[in-house]
Image (cartoon, rainbow, N blue to C red; front, side):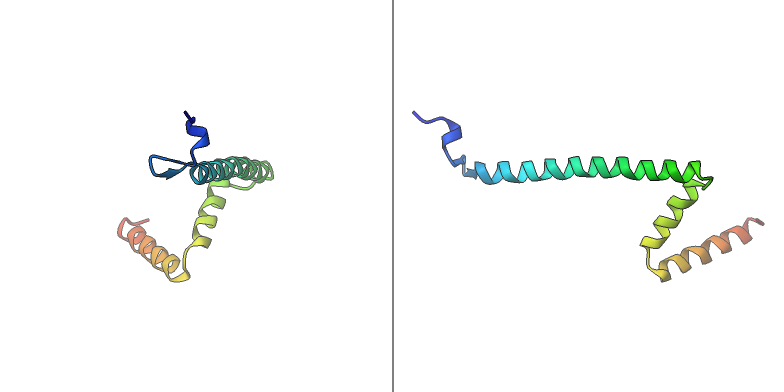
Length: 86
């Protein structure tokens, strides 16, 4: 009688391949956690230097967008502000 560890395919699933995929995802999640900590440290540094972290986050979000998208949002924001008398 063989154990499931010795059987490379259990229920039609290649166990080694599945284990490899899961371990790779786990490693990347650990890296992501470490990177999130590094990013948090950078924002803490920015705050201690007197920068507004909320505004920095907005700028980062804007830089990820296409220029036409940013322009459209800014135009709408301006229209809405004028409509509200701001």
